[in-house]
Image (cartoon, rainbow over all chains, first blue to last red; front, side, top):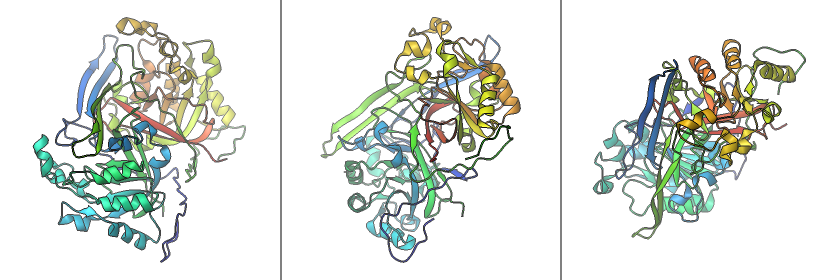
Length: 259
Length: 259
């Protein structure tokens, strides 16, 4: 663990250590019939093929599933908004594994469902933690993960279909902050505990566009981040390896620092 | 790293260390149109929803997918063959993360596509490595991962449909060895680089039944294991979190020991 000083140091390589007795936290929502997808999407579908005793005397159960790539806890691959961007299978493991930098913006989001995380929020983390957002996986904690079971609260609307999109209200990353990160901070990836890295009222999705132009992958609908410290946890975020995918279901976990 | 002696020690807790500069190996096959599923299953389906410029002037691409739970590199959850067994979401992270014990049986499999990995093969690993198969993720290396692009070689047949099942020929774990592990060695999970933990000619799937009765999860169609040492690599195997799933696509990676 780096001992933070008052100044902001540049580009330290943190030593990530995962011990056998490490405490792992699952940051992933279940995929089931209630899993939240975009209002224009149908949800996750799981159907039973077999469930019961076979003629040969053993029990057997199997199912099949269908879904849009972008729903539930998932990876946005850069090609989602960037024609030349990486597909799911092209996102390298070094971007999916690393130290978490948790940006806690719950206070700002509590009274403003349209809040956009700004450069000031990122600067505050750097000042408080005594280092820059370099070589980290940025995880934005709006607190919205706690609304996951309440679609209306989580998305701002429980309506579906194209007309519901304009009714979306949830926090996201300000496109100016996305630009600042892309230009000045070599982060590995960015995750958020809402349905999109652009806030609900976005119409041009400029945070997506900017990050993906720089091949910075995004994790959306990340689950409750309350057990993670501001720094020091190790994230492992592994998407289903969909060749040429624009996104994929993501299993994201974190190991807590032992100190 | 434990220094191996001639005697077999019991139950040492290995210190697993994953450093920032760790070298990660992906042990996962791609999901695409050629991904291998059981002869009675249709394959992985990926369809394009959108791909191109929007009216608002930004590029946008999205897709959707459908698949059986059991195909490609995937997790078999214990409920697959055990009515009271864990579902995908119930398999705990401590079973999915741990040190790899690689059982190399390529020599035996080279001349015998119906080879079943026996207790002797497991004993040989223990003798050579100077420890027991305790608290490890057992990975069976038959060498079949190198046949992945050749369905006929990998499965023993490129036919599909119910009649093709009797033509399956590939190595697996002998049910007697599964029983021995379940009774005598608290392993975390077992993976294999073939299509099933029971060999291709199995009719009653008794290795599945035995392991799942003890809630030991299985990883199937694991990719090439050639870069892993017999012991010392750290495996992280994260399935898509399908609630009540009997199986799920699995992203499995390993970090190589630094020495």
